[in-house]
Image (cartoon, rainbow, N blue to C red; front, side, top):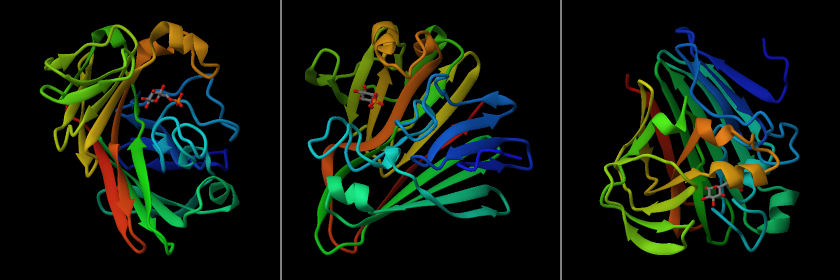
Amino acid sequence: MNMDANVVTLIHDNGSSAKIHLFGATVISWINDNTEQLFLSTLSKMDGSKAIRGGIPVVFPNFGPWSCGPQHGFARISWWKLQKQEKLEDCVRATFVLEENDHTLSLWKYRFRLTYTVELRPQELETSLSISNTGTESFDFTALLHTYFRVSSIKECSVTGFEGCTYNDKVTKEDGRVENREKIHVDANVDSVYISSGTKCHFVSSQGRKIKIEKQNLKDTVLWNPWSAKAKEMSDFDDEGYLNMICVEAGHVSERKVLQPGEIFGCGQKLKIVN
Ligand code: BG6
């Protein structure tokens, strides 16, 4: 039994589990075959005072620095409501909802409804986000699933699926670079926004384990690891934590999506352990 009232736990008959914190509807754990698949900083605040550092924070309505409010928007720093928790034939599922409230309206004047479902299946975690414009004015946004994968050693890890993509390198501040590597090995601070990486899958491999990321309607992908110096600058990031994580973030971030009143934008990702 989970004693933390702010955490929803999904347990599958096969023994796998997932935990979702109501703060940000942040998936904070996914255990498959007795192995944690997501990175969560041991220094992460879990009391709602700061975005959770790890797992899968939901970024909306803005990726990156934002003129209306905090970096990466308010979805990850809002308390969501658990709408439903169900056991279906092949999966266990929890559905969370966030709608405009005094805090969001103080930053961003629009009415919206976010519905986020987390589905746990054997060898698979699927997270789906539906963004609905429930107001009378159009709005625009960027959105992203900021997944922190746990890896046993970043030095033994590779990420694929970017070859041929154009990307903006936020570390060197060079836009429009073209990726020529089939497999990316991270050995320094990386912060790259791959534009229209499209329906390509990414594989995160780390010491014999491979996770396939299948994106749905999220055309871009961000690759991020702060590396040593930047990790030390973050109060909620373990100094050595960068050695055990890689963020591969499926998003719609390279251009803003316009949503008319009544329109819905659906997107998501399936994370599948393929070996
Ligand atoms: C990534 C951005 O998505 O998130 C980086 O591309 C940023 O630039 C990183 O540093 C972490 O952001 P935050 O706000 O959680 O510290």
